[in-house]
Length: 382
Ligand SMILES: Nc1ncnc2c1ncn2[C@@H]1O[C@H](COP(=O)(O)OP(=O)(O)OP(=O)(O)O)[C@@H](O)[C@H]1O
Ligand SMILES: [Mg+2]
Image (cartoon, rainbow, N blue to C red; front, side, top):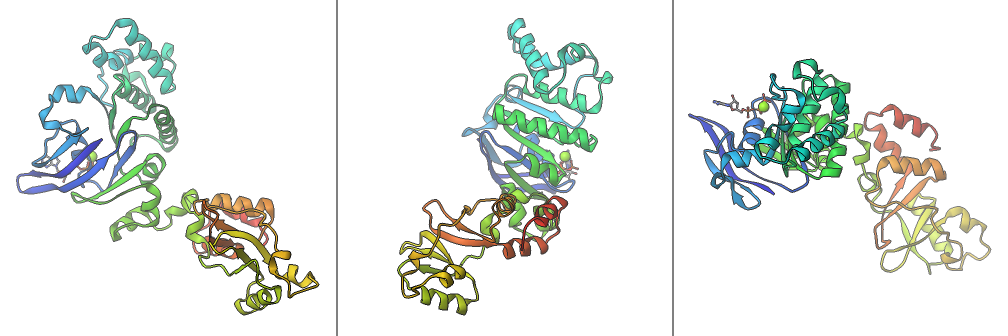
């Protein structure tokens, strides 16, 4: 765990970080993002003491890093920068093995580890280990930079715009590689970028910085849905949530007070309720609010005795969703099961809301539709 407590940094009278407070949890990728000059690199370099705070403190696992040996501290972390910082006069192998050798690890162990790291970043060791940095492409260089950062198996890895100089395809490939590495390695990674798409793709938490302040520090979906500040929503971009539809959940778009009845109510009363509320079905719930069935007007119209309780004709819902079910799954459900609405229940089966075709279409049409969604929607009967 890395904690920033009341950290400031000034150069003469210029305060470039103003009282920064945040905590980076173990095993998470935290992305620092914000406009040029907002203090991202300064914040990052404070973690390995390349820059020291003017006031405040930084704790790693509860210990103030100013009380640690700076060289040992730096070696205990991986560090990747934009131009990789590879030594040009050393081969790929020598670059990766610099610190493990300084640490006097056994030669066979180092060499095995290097092979493993090359495979990890998807480069053929045979082909690349003896090359010099100048003989590699930008994407290959960055892969080596990443491999080197993992070489001492550090708990913390700092990355300052490691992929920003790359073309979009190479960049996207490296982002995928990092995410998949992270699922296996569970490092604590602090990653600086300018690019919101990159942040959303890789981050467990995003820290939005502006002029030396943190404006918002939260999970990507929270930032996309509830930007805390005018600048944040501008920075994030209004429609960006729609390029990440998996973050839109049933409870964002459902009707929160669907019309309900209880099972012992006579059918004619239910009919009356539907007429008054202008709906053609009711959710049947018990006294605890748990969903026990669904009744449609058509069921009642077919019944002989409308004095009888509605439970005689109600049916089990074909399917239900959870509040956290994504809009993508909801669209698939609607398509696959040909239903016009989906009750939303929580873990105790308590009815929380109702997603209808209308609420889906309204949610979508209020926003920009991406092509895949239009395609899915095309097959939904509304
Ligand atoms: N050694 C220094 N002396 C004086 N000012 C500095 C120094 N280093 C950084 N700054 C200033 O501190 C502010 C924050 O710089 P920092 O490098 O952290 O920004 P950044 O968010 O990483 O920007 P970029 O996205 O352009 O990399 C900037 O205004 C910069 O000019
Ligand atoms: Mg920077």
